[in-house]
Length: 579
Image 1 (spheres, one colour):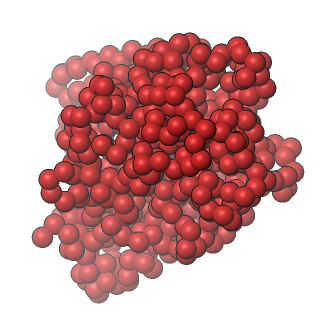
Image 2: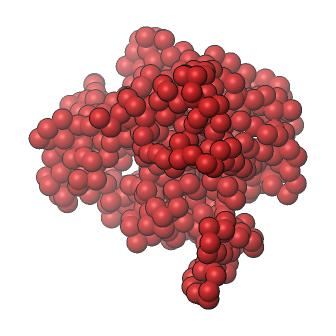
């Protein structure tokens, strides 16, 4: 059941105290200031989540949960850091039979001022933001926890050379501080908690200027370039994460027993009492979820402003029965700006992104239209994922919900290796026919999570075919490259390990999601764009080329990522930015 929460604010101002009370659990928003409430609590604000098979250690999965948006590297004297009295959590679901977490990692941080007599943060070997953490792990969905790291070390902020390298500072170098803080948990996980360059790259200014990406007049700019975040990175053996009872090795690269769902959150105490005289606030009451994050940009660019805080009241498992927000995936607002019969002409930056209004001269995926619903219950969908006897009413719930077959499952269930969700290669013009197996990260017992099939091999970052376009590029190769499009057999295609099959640091998720809204996933399975005539010899039409070559103008991070754990780039130094 979904719990509906109330928040009350009690401001009592006697001589000594101001009391803020949350009488029952309330959920704020998450990511880069994407919703009203969490913008006031940056220390607990999830910014991004990543989950990928480790490129240099493929027997493990690396999960990175970032917090605290848009940290200024020179933001002294009180630099950003993980907050005390906050539970930072990473949740893993690996069993579709159980609507809830199987594994939970819980981090809590403690700060110490070693020299309160100075206004400097680092001086003479002492830190005035010395931060340590405890890491606990639960293997029963959060019912019981075991401590697996005690007194973990968080590196200090990367203030500048005098504070870090010189004898009047710490007398070391920053990379040594990072490497010295990487811990091996008692249960085998590798852990890093600390400052990092913000790995998300996007022209925030252009995107939120009514979709001006790429910018039509002027150069695009990475809105998060030269900003930092605080990262929680954990590298976990696949054997720990796989479904209970699954074999040690997968049957094939799409083995369903190796699918995990990952989401991150932060909890605060329900009651905080602010006291006069410089006394630290008193924290008590139940732990309350105040932010969560799974898929990138969900709450930022799919859920409308008036529903953002409500979205954050739900765990992914609440979304099984809470369906009021599904409409924004069935009929996404962004699709209106990719449709010239709606508002497409008002957003020239999206001119390359045009949804199918007459795919195969039969199917209209414009907002409010029926998409594939007209096939519901017919013989042509028998045995496919669109058959109610296979997945129930999930994918064709009602008329007027055209994106129930692509955007909704991408964000809510993952994609199964079942017709029609196979590449159009070998389908001979029938999108509902069996094609080339491509992806299976189906985990239908929760909503918004990153879903990753851990059996899919790593694409080496130095592979000439490695691409930040993730599964989009894998589909392009599977459809057009002679190495892959001559057979319907399952093959290892480069970038099958890319977003939205998990999320690698390099993946350009903004461009991928905009392409998905434009119908790229529909085209991949054979529901081609309107400028293709059904039965024609070559479905690679100009509309398709326009969509798959669309870019936002910011295509990579402002710093190269590391090749070894924790993979995130080191944080920007306060003395090298802002001048």
